[in-house]
Length: 60
Image (cartoon, rainbow, N blue to C red; front, side, top):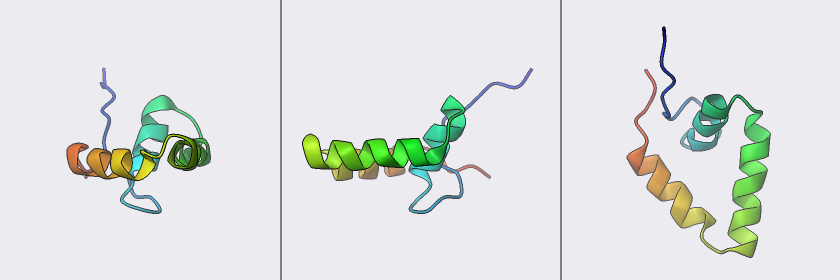
């Protein structure tokens, strides 16, 4: 049995949204829109994205 892992995938910008979407089995566009909304309304979208890009391992 294969276990799911949260890892960066080949995507638009560093693969963070694509990795999260793959892990959650949803469309990457939904995650990208959520990050954009978080950026405008909470102000921490860029910082959160960069932290995730550094912490999440890259898929091989």
